[in-house]
Length: 451
Image (tube, rainbow, N blue to C red):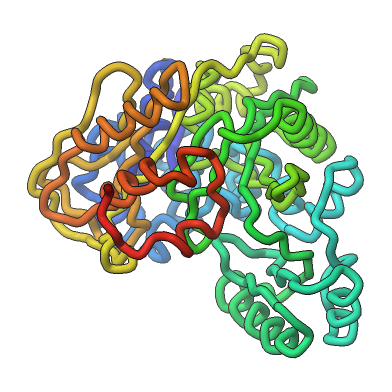
């Protein structure tokens, strides 16, 4: 087992890894930017090293600085968390070539799965359903037009290196296909340095269902059941829950089995998430693999009792998973609300600034993963998420009631947060009956207060 691990991240995920390390008897080394000098992950780690100035491009994304910090600290392994360099195959390779184990899949697996077009081909090879679409990347307009006609409009144009909704456009007809193709390509080049795009049939009002998986180097691949992440705004997840509220049992089993096939066929070791969209008839289609731990992993932890971060560390150290598939059950219901420093009444405008006071909720079934405290100043340089409120109860109805109580209990003064939005969505009839699709928030929420 590792003796010392460097955490190449910040905020609540850095704290999450520090906690896992401490329970396993492993020393933790934090890295931080000058803007994060007083952050909680810096205070709680066994050692902390500054890697640059406030901007992430000058600190958390500086591969040479991260590697240098690992060398100075004498660590055995590097945990990337999520975001920043977590899915950067070059960083993965440099960690390994510098003598540090990367806590995640191999660079080859990461690179293949990170390219959506390649991942789609891998899904087809494993008999995992995919959305009807182009056979590879679109090279010219004539091919795009013929493909769109064959699969039927509307079509979705997707960047092969995309993420977070960037490089993604919908073409309702052939008249706008060229302009939408160019817009997607230009955005993809600006965001990822890769203008490759492909086409898929646009599934109207889909649900977003993803499956948490983890695999070791001993041939074991397990799923930790599904999460429903359909409550989104502009492709950004806001609420996640497990199990899905309205998924027939045969579909639940089929989608989890498909996720396992996908990972088993990718020579993959570590934690990951296989993402699908589900149409109104419960047909499901593969969309992508996130080759890392995800923000919403606590939802799966709560319903299974598995510590996913500790399992990641075990796998990277060459140990087998501490459980088998037949030992896992999905117990009760869990919901996670992402608490962001944003004003939902003003189109989710960022709200950085000083937290004058904060009171975190507690009680039976409540977990609050956060790096912020009273007096903390939320910097404007990074993602606006300041915490994750998670509840776990025997039924979905109880989980919703507990979450509403916990949201009332969560007191954050000095900045605006997304708490009012969460109170609204958890009382909304579409959420209560499990019929929310990925565009529901964009259609229905206009900054209104909870009822």
